Image (tube, rainbow, N blue to C red):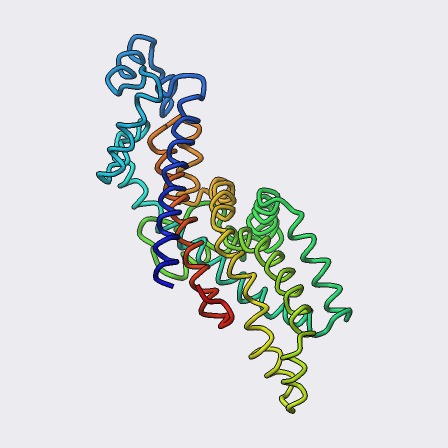
Length: 322
């Protein structure tokens, strides 16, 4: 196990090096100057050229890359062109907000998807199985931005109009005001964006779990457990679910980049002050250091979660040995 983990860490490091090279080259290949328009301030050509020269951006990208790697190795992600602040500080301020939203949506997704998928598998072809299948297909097929806009209209506009401002969800932000930072206010603001991020995950996780449960329920060890006289609940939840949930572990690890990309859109719709909204603004401003900082953070999280998925696999399934 130790040798396997060391080998996986080495492979993950090589992946991060490749990702840094690829995205550094892609950002430099984008046409136009990052100082054409920044924070609604127009720079004339001489100013833009002087600033490009001061930052070394007028050199070929393959000459800039070694300096970027050297800065990364020293823990320096550079300074944002638009904000004039270190990228690391901007990420530290925004990442907790994104992790809060993503973590809440993941917990909600698992708490709903696991019972839904398990019940659908143990009651195959029942009316509830049919309903959950239709709902799951709709959830998988609907883009996150469509779900976000619909929730924005229904929960924030239509509900307010129907109830006469007595009951409605906040449309934007994380808190009602800087003075109101209570947990209740935070949960109320998180309701719509968290639901928008959870719908796709609930649909996908429940479908994967249903398929896994249907496969496991026909294996020999499940039949043996039933023949020993164990009740259906014990067989389904203690024996079958443990192995059927293994694909969900991998799916959770691979889902992180998709969650972050979905969060970019959802945070933009609901103005949630997280990493996704920061990435959206950085792309609009051609803020190279900030874009690369967000991309490298997502890459590190992806490699880390894949490593944790492999370790969790070995813990959950005793047949796996490295």
